[in-house]
Image (cartoon, rainbow, N blue to C red; front, side, top):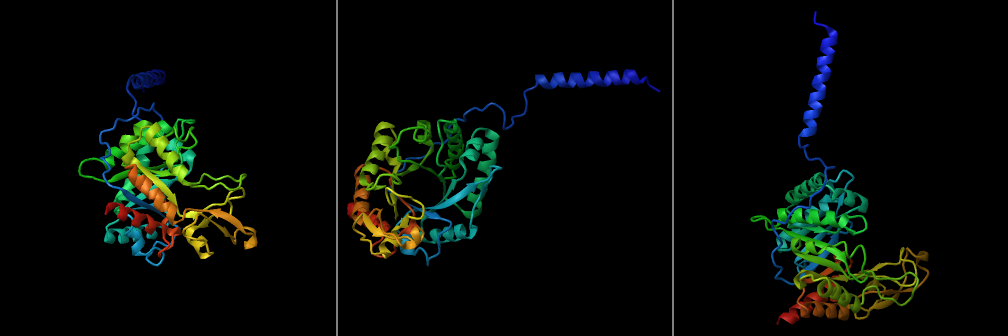
Length: 363
């Protein structure tokens, strides 16, 4: 029988040699290895069209009963909102039947469908920090693109920030998505929703200049500039759109064709709570609001049981036409609406007002 002391000694020596050998080898890349920002292989092509973008949240009735074909036909891009990031970095679509039906209808009408994603900031910040995590997210996202026949991806993470370094991770994510979506023969779109730029800080600076080449266009959210303490403040006046244009295009150097100006289809009060007081444009008109004005006296069943009137501020048809003209005159990439399910679908429609203004300008 072999000497057990000799065998134990030989075993320990082998373990030590294996450990030393492993230390000398380059380890397999794992999600926790030091990160290197990927290069951009395929940039977005030039945006040569004036886009008409509308968001379609999953919780709306997206059938023809809820949103008629006439509304869809006045848009050329429908963004389904939202696919949500999960703690394991995969992506989940709430109400998949709504997405399936929206894609089917849009394909029949010649309207492109994008899948907008968002979710909890802390999960996104961790996901974009490492290549392995981003790969899980991107693979899950692209599986949905293939499954539903999606035409593009819209990054609606609100927002990457310079405070926690997620701005750099977002750049890595957008480069990797651009390399996939803009590769020859793929011909899909990549867009992003971003802050209006009035309040310069970690969120506006969180969109790095290097992201510009990755993106077909940016949906600039030029609305929600409200106050809960000061009355009389309109959350989306003409000046906010002008401020957004000046910041992103004139100060930050964004190519004008990548700037798509946002228009709200809802109203907010000022100088009071925003909980239960925000109304859809359709709801405002149903209460007697004037489609050609920008404020109305309303009530809400969610605020003091509908017993208290207050002033709500919104965009009426003349203001929507003015914003549309501004965007066309500046040669930017188009206009965007949040969101189509809040609109009326008759002559008072804000999407129709913008569409008619675009058509008039093209005559």
